Length: 289
Image (tube, rainbow, N blue to C red; front, side):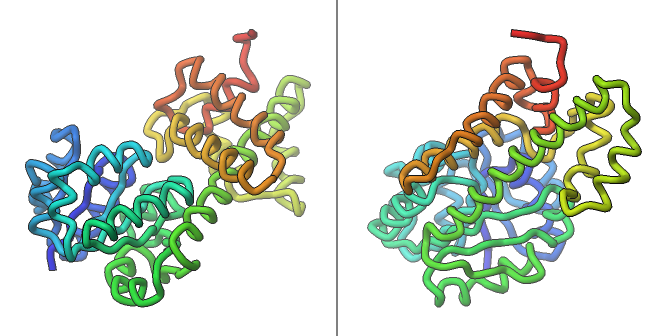
């Protein structure tokens, strides 16, 4: 079975590397061809177009930035004609309403669809320890469990299409909220002239502690955000999707709006392509509005 992968950016490239490492025949396509060259050196075939990729692959993993990119790549007239009998596994972060709409369009074109967003970063993608959350019909999950098992020790079926997209937004909201809350406390400690380590030592002993605090501490203290695993602009997009989805369900989003404003300020300051922990620069910065 030849697998396709569309979108060889940060996460898509790492997932492609993992599949090639375990011997999975792989064809890839990316809008910027140069981003796929490393994968070609590892044995991937580079398709000239998304339609050409679909024509030769039974299943295709999508690692695109948003629903608009999916529509522009997968739901064109040329690509639609190649969807008959094919399975699309959508692994990016999009809204549940968007995921269900894409599923309907793929089904209308004669294909099948699973959503399988992931939790984890580039190291986990490369060593096959991502948390993969699947929204699909149960039979479709069972059919593709072994492929997804190359990326995760235990892929998890969450429910029908839309369920895992919702879960992913709930988790990604915490990325922004936990990081901004920790950043505010860290800034208070430093601006008050207190040592960071006693603060961290007490925090680590408490129920308030989250491992992400230590994971990001060195970046925040050094103000170094290059080589991102998850860029700030991607977090901003996910926070917007969370707010839209929560509002549809009647959930107050005031707190998330505050976090998004911090993230947007960091983007304005020029940190959009850097690691999302750069939101700290919008909290602890001499650049005042």
